Image (cartoon, rainbow, N blue to C red; front, top):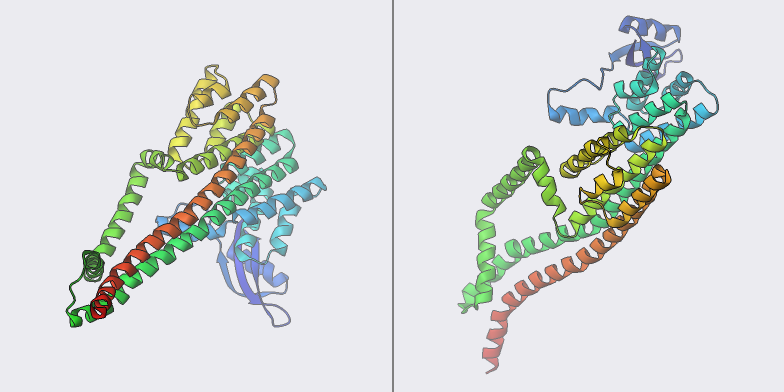
Length: 406
């Protein structure tokens, strides 16, 4: 069964568009005519799971699957409908019928089509383009344990917390980023536009310039004369960094963790994501080893992910989770103590959640510290640079005034 998007004219002469399930385009045309719609365009929606020939093309195809926010709404609503006793195929089809966004309607139709063919929801979502292993693992676990509605809600909560943390990180960094951009723009403007005009005055007056003024003028001339080379160098530097990040991902990610202040924030975010996900997976009934492997997939830092995956071998050999995580030298002592207490009391999912909440509070504190540090530091650097430029430019003028006064 395929999914087709169509455009056509209804019985009242109005233009309509939407999606429809049918084995072939001819069958889709016949179904639409029975509904009183005369289609003039029918296009089959190709599988989003097929690999694209180019990474660039894959970026454009991402829009065919729901965003995290759209997925949260879908999972929460589907959980409510299933809890109310509505059959899963009917529930998913109701999304497709009421959805105005084309890419979402197509997505829901694909899921409904797979469900009708007898596929479980986790497999249907994966084939429709969902790649989040945690969401799929929670749904699969819910299908096995007959707790699908509860696990759908849990998956939505997990995605919601991720979005919340991402929002806080962006909010904390956006102001310093804007400030740095404006500061750089002001400095470049002064060096490339303001200073050359003032230099003309100095030359006409045949002034003897102090060293600081000569330095500023030299920097200005260098920027104006060699800006194509500077841009090329910046692009090459960026390309080199991206290449290093791709070829030596583990080394690059380990260096990021050693960055002052920011490195600790990155580590805390990765560990919080891991502990929260592992807590949800274990609470849903997933075995510990499988839970660790799946939760580690949420970690974006390659070095941290590799260290966490090493713990599975240690746990298989009989080591406790807390001891295995301690040997990674990544986790703070408080989090390890909470995990250890969970193992002793038999409430590991609950204590992992507490460890996650502790790490979350640490992230918020570190983000506040980072913001409060970056803002004054940026202002100070900007003030020193502009102050020096203004001082260097005014010094010859002050010298003239002093001489004339005598």
